[in-house]
Length: 106
Image 1 (tube, helix red, strand yellow):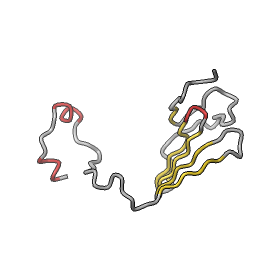
Image 2 (tube, rainbow, N blue to C red; image 1 turned 90 degrees about the vertical axis):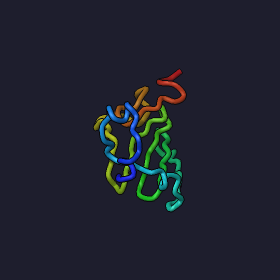
Image 3 (cartoon, rainbow, N blue to C red; image 1 turned 120 degrees about the horizontal axis):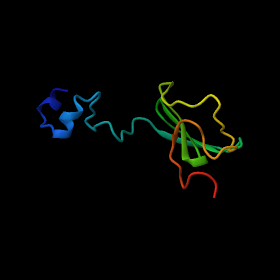
Image 4 (tube, one colour; image 1 turned 90 degrees about the horizontal axis):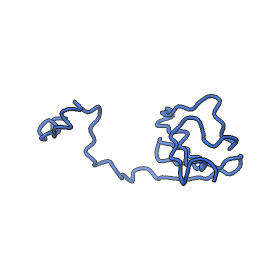
């Protein structure tokens, strides 16, 4: 944080105020933890689970919707209790819809 205080700040950065967290980029792309990917096609809608260290994400292929993101077991995304993950609706209610390659059928 002391190093950040010495850096000149842009007008936009000053308008935003102090950052909640500052990363120097040294840990980005770290190879400390091995990443893994698994695909689950056993249900009505396939999804991909991505893991790296204590982080885990679940991405449904229906709209490329991120339905879960956990760090150290703590869930960071909200899903509706009545969300349909079976493809009966054109979209999943909740999570982060990427809408790829398009939204809905057709």
